[in-house]
Image (tube, rainbow, N blue to C red; front, side, top):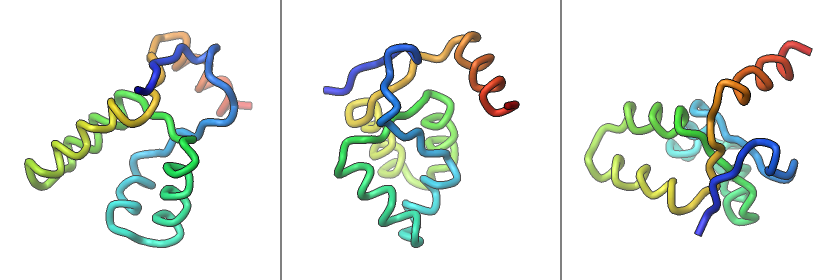
Length: 94
């Protein structure tokens, strides 16, 4: 079962896949599909609540929503806090 981590506890071996990349993955567009599939196979994907919310919001069917809800059981999730958002902003600013 995936573990929910604070940002300081996560190793640098995990990849946070952006919503736009997930959309391309679900459309089976390359190179997104094969790259993300490899990350899934290697158990390297983590997720955040905002990405899950964006994907569910864009779902077209109830079946898609149910598939996306499985994310919380499959991938590790970052706990999101104001500190996390500040660190992300500073990291991207540099």
